[in-house]
Length: 269
Image 1 (cartoon, rainbow, N blue to C red):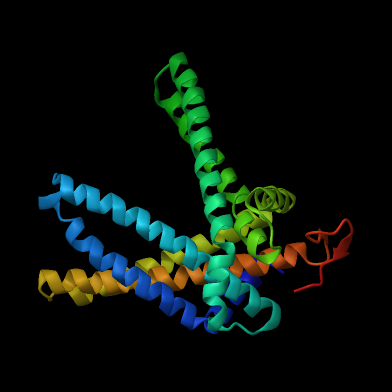
Image 2: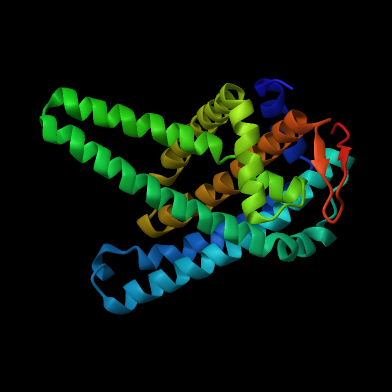
């Protein structure tokens, strides 16, 4: 499968998963509407508002993890058997919840470690001389490392769902697949990013034109609703595209069956 075929499949199969998009739409609308008053500049210094913002962010994150598990399970079903039942959404959400949460916590630890290492390296470079050249070197180094890390960490969450692996095993497996297919994976990531940005810009521009003559409060609600719709549809498209690509990359590879000492060949998706 080429990266263009994966992107095309992302849009084609998402059309068959609109129930999942609606679930994320409801979630994003609720988050957006709750966030509007909390983001008011007049309340920025209110300790009560800050506390509510932090607690609501944690709650939304925990709910999001559940939604990710449910959505990824249905995406896998749709790609493998062309049949995804919303009745399984909750079951998948519960099944993969702790593993996805564990993986995201591993991501945070990895990010903190990389930031600390880059900070030390950058400080060392800038000690040589704080000028345009050294700053450019630091910026280039940070950009390259960030792109590489994102590419290596794209597949573990798909390994959890597609291969029923634990957090650590999925992290190792996903990074191995990404390493073996680095440039293809980077190409798909870049392609989906460009497509997503293009859609967001066009929709944002049209929404801005429509909301201009409206009262400020109504305009804010309209923008929040449109943003929620875009943020619900595009992630599912990307989820399908990357899951399809991951399945194509690992099709036919021997995989370890949990609880068995032997390996079997995984059938092509």
